Amino acid sequence: MTPVWLHGWPLDERMWERQVERFGGVAVNLYGRGNSIDAWAAQLLEEVAGDDLALVGASMGGYTALAIAQRAPGRVAAIVLAASKSAADGPERREEREALIERLAADGPPENAAPGVSIEDLIACQEAIRDRPDLTSVVTTFGGVLVAAAGTEDEIVLTEDAFELAGLAPDGRPYVFAGAGHFLNLDQPDEFDAMIAESLAL
Image (cartoon, rainbow, N blue to C red; front, side, top):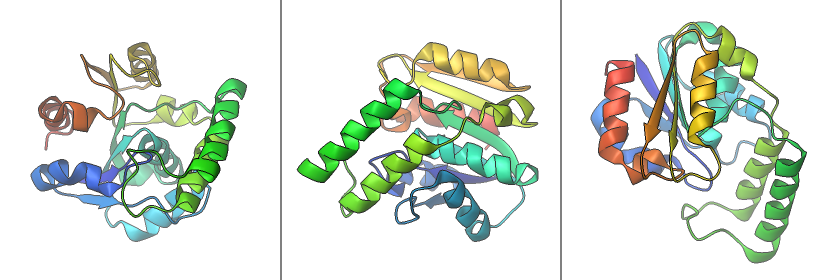
């Protein structure tokens, strides 16, 4: 099984340095690929070799993992959704993203943005997230292990969201990280690595 590490916004592939060192695989950069997550998935399927992929996605990376699995389910052995969802944004959340895009254009990148990522790429990713379709059908039909994880201090993806999502998958496994925020592997690296080792048998 080859892990593919898919980063969250506004971080980049460097958020996975610890996990790549321990578990191997490839950490990809999602910036500079336009404003369509489905298009990102198509590009990554061309770039990443192998038919036994374990897609580990944080937030935006989780949306990308589901888009990859929708396009090529036969190539995906496992999915880990770390603080991510399968549903599309509702009207209120879309409005929040529109406001965020306006702030990015006016004020520049957020404090936690990865160094070197352009405003144009940060905005394109928010547009891609805003416009993504509902991919719950990928979860309900996925034949491999599907992990849904959330931190108790995350205000974006709640722990109940993780339980609900895992409950939709034939082999869904919920994980809760007490005290963690949105980026689970950074907030609780030891616990996150233990989850990966257990779930993916790496």
